[in-house]
Length: 335
Image (cartoon, rainbow, N blue to C red; front, side, top):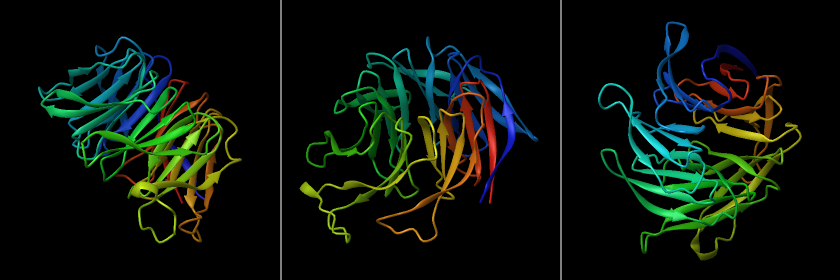
């Protein structure tokens, strides 16, 4: 069994903190919340401190922030229906572009692996894909409307230009650009959850996806490509995503976020019961019927709902979390 050790507790935001995001180099992170501000933190010696506060980009709550893969840009999604793009080109962070088009709250934002595409999603039930057209220029490449309810999260595949979205309609959708006409299409619908899918994350090679839901379960999905050796049918020669494992009984309330560590394979969850839990694939796990076990549970990780968790992309075992209680916590996973 492992243990989660609390290393730092950080305060600075007023009110609930919705999102935290590690910089690709793992030595800086950004946070956002209902105070309409983004804070950028870095480590000095043994302590983390706010280096920059960006407070002039949004008029309402900032729901999520994400760094571009190159680490030069930061995107922020807000309830004011806009997504802001920040960069440090002049030496100081400033808002260099504001993406408009969603009818209401933008819930999530994600950069593709190449950094050439950006996805956003909203309570207006749509997913937008934007092309980076040049310095501080973004063009809408697609507006996708297959979801029937509020879209909570968008996440790009770690190696391919495939996008996953999670929704209040209980489903996850996959999108890819058609080779025939360059239109973006919904290529798969993943149905198994019985309530809102709050968050999703791919594993390191993108062959599996983990999802977490209001139904208090985690689900593991596997991609079966045309011609797969498991004999899973792939109609229209499209990849099929199958739910291969459901983890239930560990969480007592909605699971709001999930992070699948690309370095260790550990899965962390953020829950409405104030807890953080860590799961690991069993040593005797089978490819098509995998098994996962809970290795540790920090039942009172925060004093209120845990909204976000994210593994450090560089430092194995370091986890960051944020909560309605107005704190950010940095944890170290010990075996």
